[in-house]
Image 1 (cartoon, rainbow, N blue to C red):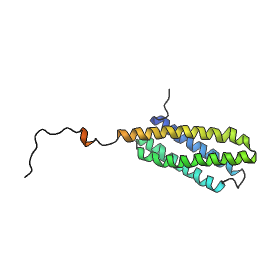
Image 2: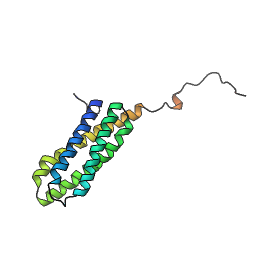
Image 3: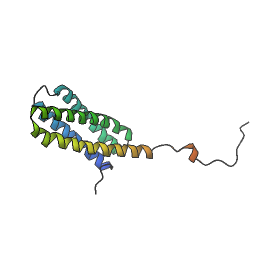
Image 4: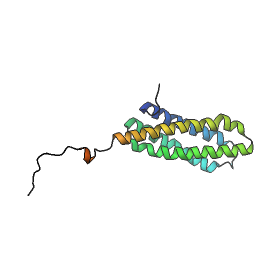
Length: 143
């Protein structure tokens, strides 16, 4: 089975995130202008940029480059949830069922996988603790 927290899975999550952000821009740009449009364009643009940073971080195995993607993905998930509630209140349940809910599920799963890989890479890259180091048997006095 293909693991999402592997290097290839993180790269695939970044590519899927770019595609979903572009789809959000295409679908919601033609929808009602009052539906958090200005906020949505900025968050989707930041999502595209941070997804490119995530792909670079995964290829170079730098876990610190995962953080911008996790922040913007959390904001994008909030945006999709808010847009879903507004669309349901307006009666546009078809868009919620066929676009917003799958996007929230896909990005939520990718967010969890990247966070899991981030914690694993951070733990693997920590310097050794002083308690685990061997003690020298002979102490040399520098004086």
